[in-house]
Image (cartoon, rainbow, N blue to C red; front, side):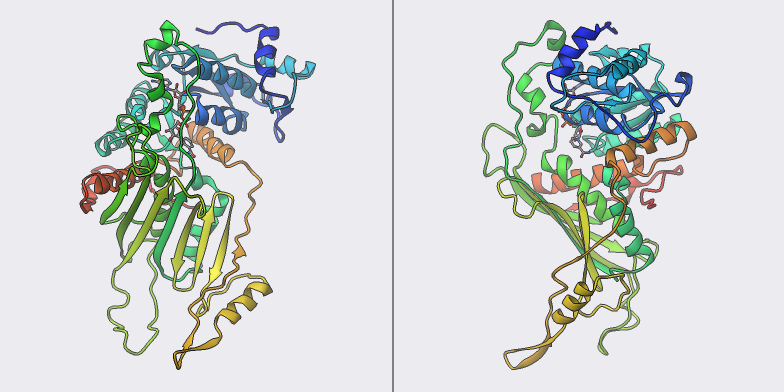
Length: 489
Ligand SMILES: NC(=O)c1ccc[n+]([C@@H]2O[C@H](COP(=O)([O-])OP(=O)(O)OC[C@H]3O[C@@H](n4cnc5c(N)ncnc54)[C@H](O)[C@@H]3O)[C@@H](O)[C@H]2O)c1
């Protein structure tokens, strides 16, 4: 399967889109070849090729020994990026070619084999692990086949298209002793880890009593159809190129916004609360785009959690007025997680607001803020401006002759300071390589994958069937030990 690519052909192909820069911070040849982890990549479209040129490039102890994609342009691109990644070379737009030293490294690096059929790849290559970045409906069979062939698995989210499939994956992972890591990359983001730590261990938010998150965009989410015919080899796997490229928009291959966007953020909510919801209800529809797609273009769901003292997200409170029933205020309490995703207004963007009685965190993949409640007594290493804003918000105002406290929390948040200089994709793949070598369960483990599959699909069912969906604990309970889905570092 592995064609030899001459230097001239390689440069012609690579030079068209890329330039050259050496990834900093490691020597790509500091490990002996036979010590390297052998990885095969299945699906090198948008996200798969990103992992190859960023996450896996940041893993000097990994060789991508094979790439598989049924669509030749993506397979070719994945092949070139993987070979460069093995050589520790990062190409960037605008560069025209490799230096002689880089070319030498490339010549010495493992040249990946190329496949259309992932089963053939699993059978022929001696792989330690696979990276799956294909459409949702294909994940299940690929994960099961990879585990059966003795591989550890990195699978993109959402882990599975059906809840029963996700349960099968948990069982298979247990039986084979191979782990499944799921691409909820926020689990590796220092910001999210710090925020969960601050909430659980320092009580900075007080009692989290509401979580509000959304992913709002203003585009059609479509991939343009190229003007090219499929080769006979591609046509064996691809029946309809429009559905193949725009798989997110069709029910047979995706559950739309719920599985493509929501699961990332619902996973964060469940992580903070260290719990699963009891039920969900919601409304969605296809009301704006109406362009032949099948999935909803706006979704709105509410998940109801009950937080008990067993949960790391539980927080006992003191009475705030004389009327509060002191015997009951710390009984299990309800928290609602409200989620929406829309596709024709981007004002609110993508963020999660974790709301406690002492303060809130507003989190995004690019940064996060703490907002103090006016009544807050928490200690926070805050700037003087934040203190001042907090005091200002707490001033007494009059309204309709009644004295009351302004109900506004601090309006300008304090940044949550973390070292965010590292690529999150590299962090998640360095963890992947670490667990392949050392064993154990990764942070974004198979139970995280199962739980977020349940969250996404239960919400989807609630909207599709216009009913409240009860989330049965039996869906995420097993009669064997399973990895902790709420690890924080
Ligand atoms: N974690 C994140 O932030 C994030 C971001 C984007 C996408 N994703 C996930 O990554 C996955 C892929 O999304 P994408 O945007 O890269 O899609 P994409 O369409 O760009 O890429 C998917 C690739 O899989 C290939 N493919 C399809 N069926 C295959 C098969 N049977 N064998 C081999 N290759 C096959 C396609 O040809 C294509 O190249 C999805 O699960 C998606 O949810 C995650």
